[in-house]
Length: 368
Image 1 (tube, rainbow, N blue to C red):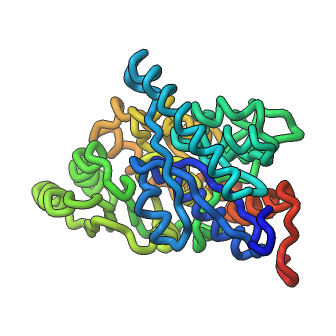
Image 2 (tube, rainbow, N blue to C red):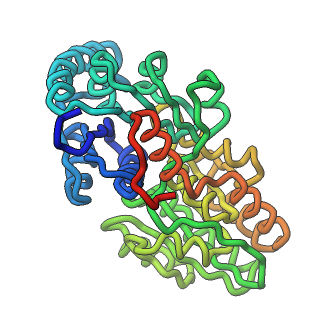
C-alpha cells in the first residue's frame, strides 16, 4: 500500500456494458463503504474508454485484442498482444500497489488480473453471465473469490472461493411486488443500441396481440437512430406505440410494466429479476459462448421468464406468447414472484463489502 494515500482497488476488464456497468456499480459501493481509490484498467476498444472517466474514475488502458471468433490466426495474435500487455500491467501493479484486483471479465481483464496475481495481489473475479467467460475461466485457478450470479457457474468453483451474490446493479433497482389489475402494459427493451431483430418483428406481433387483447399499451426502446423507422412500422400495422431511443428510468418502467420483452444480457436479466416482472427473453444469438441464452434459460428454469431463441422468434410465435401471458394474470404474477425471488438487488454492496474484507480494509465508521 502506498504510504499516505488511500488504498487502491483495481477493477480490470470491460469491453461491453455487461462487464463495465457491474464494475461501475461495485466501484460506487466501494466508495460508499470505505476510503479507497478505485482504478479501472481496460482497453481503448471497449465502452470503458468513455464511460468510466465520465463517472469520475481513473482509467488506465492496455492494448489488448480479442482471442476468440477469428480462428487460429486471431488466437495467436491475441495471445501475443496479451503477453505484451501483461508486462505493461506488471508496471501498473508496482505503480498502484493495489490491495485487491477485481476482474469483471472481457478480454481486457486478463493481463491486469494475471499481473496482480503474479504480484501477490488478492484476485477476485466477477462473472455475471450464466456461462463462465474465457478471461475468467483462465483466471479461475488463481482467484481468491468468485462472485457469481447463477448456480451452474458457482459449481465451477470450490465453496471456499465462491460467493453467489448476483449481478451488481446501479442504484434504483429494487423489488416491486406485482399484482395483475387489468392493464396490458408491454415494455420492449433491446439494450442501449436497440435490437434490430426485435424491432423488425414486434410491430406485427403487437398488431396480432391487439386483435385478441384489449388496451394493449407498448413502450419500446428502439435504440439510437432506429426510432423513426420503428414508429413508421408500428403505424403501418395500425398500432400506437411509445417509441423511445433510450429509457431514462429503466427501473421505473420495469415497475410499471405488466410484461417485458428483452434481450438477455446479464445486466438486463438481473434488472428484471431485481424488480420482479414476467419476461419473454430473446437472446442475442452471437454473444460469446451463447451466454445470453444461458442467462435467459437460467432465469426461465426458476420460473421467472420465457426464453425464445432468435430463429424461433417469429411475429406469430411472439404474439402467441404475449397474448397468452396478458390473458393470464395469475401466471404473470407467479413469474414476477419467481423472478424477484431469483433477484439480487443488493449485489453491488455485497460484492464491495466482501472485496474489502479480502483486501483487509475496514468500512468507514457508521457504515453498516
